[in-house]
Amino acid sequence: MTDSQRTATLTIGDKSFDLPIHSPTAGPDVLDIRKLYAQAGVFTYDPGFTSTASCDSTITYIDGNEGVLLHRGYPISDLAGKSHYLEVCFLLLYGYLPSAAELEQFEDTITRHTMVHEQMHTFFRGFRRDAHPMAIMVGVVGAMSAFYHDSTDISDPRQREIASHRLVAKMPTIAAMAYKYTIGQPFVYPRNDLDYASNFLRMCFAVPAEDYEVNPILARAMDRIFTLHADHEQNASTSTVRLASSSGANPFACIAAGIACLWGPAHGGANQACLEMLKEIGSPENIPEYIARAKDKDDPFRLMGFGHRVYKNFDPRATVMKQSADEVLELLGVENNPILATAKALEEAALADPYFAEKKLFPNVDFYSGIILEAMGFPTSMFTPIFALSRTVGWISQWKEQFSDPAHKIGRPRQLYLGETERSYTDIEDR
Image 1: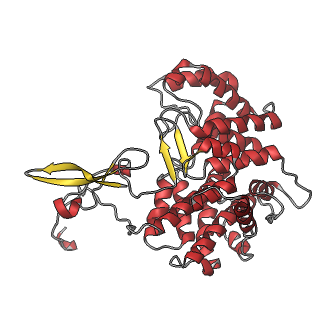
Image 2: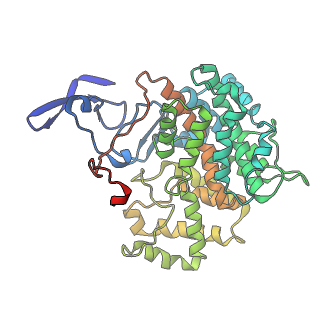
């Protein structure tokens, strides 16, 4: 990875310092500044760490300018179109696509870990009924370390493996229980004869009074949402998991930290913000007004769900998600849902407008996933919990990878201090 013949020279005053250059398999070169403070007595300044590589990784690669997203080298379009979520989970966790026998074994392991400890039902009942599902998930996932003592020793590879399987398996159950609790319905136990996505939908929408049959189109759309959100390189929540892990925290605490970070509206709430925007627009006839406002640089209104901070060209996940959105809307219809009718009309209007094409403001994955979840009947409060359960496998993969890095150490960002220098304490009677 390191080309020992290549260095960059930093000159400070009359002294020069050679910084090694690391060459990745893809992406820009990286300057190694690990010894800069020891040699030169200076820190670098990078708010948000947007120009800083905090680790090396072999899991996910993004090229935002070209619209590229690879998991272990495989394009997301291939994985979302030809694979399914649990196979992608295996790929992220272990680095390669499984054989049929390996996949069957992995799916069986996950399926048989989906139930949660029965005493956790009581733990749920400690929350207020109007608690946000994300608040419940942060608490419950963190509390898993109190229920599963046999998988908290991070120095034991076998315990790390068990914890990984438990988190992937139980997160849909926990998310569904959080949803059921907030709407006052009884918890629905998982079933071993259903696939991952179908099981989640049944746990969310089944009631004891009648049978619930999962529509395969909805299950496939749900599986794609999981797949398309499985990992996304060193984003805020993933970096949070890695930072928490660097202290030696147990896996359940680390994932709870990731969930807490994802809860922030600037990170995991994009599809919820998109639906709220559609509610504000109200109906298709209001779209021209809002498109005009979006073009007005002096108007604070912005079209949510269009464009992406990372992808400057197009979101490679959006094409597959649009296909699922079209299938779901065809199945469920939009006639009686003004939000979905508005979404469909807004998509058509924006794609036909040269302004949005020139600025590459195309519908992104959050736009389409929000439409799908709304059509399925999920409230917007459940959008981020679904994102969290999707991203759990990415967090765990990054967490596992960190343990294999011989250079890994506790995270300790530096600062540019701009406060007061040393002052003398004044006794209270003299102030």
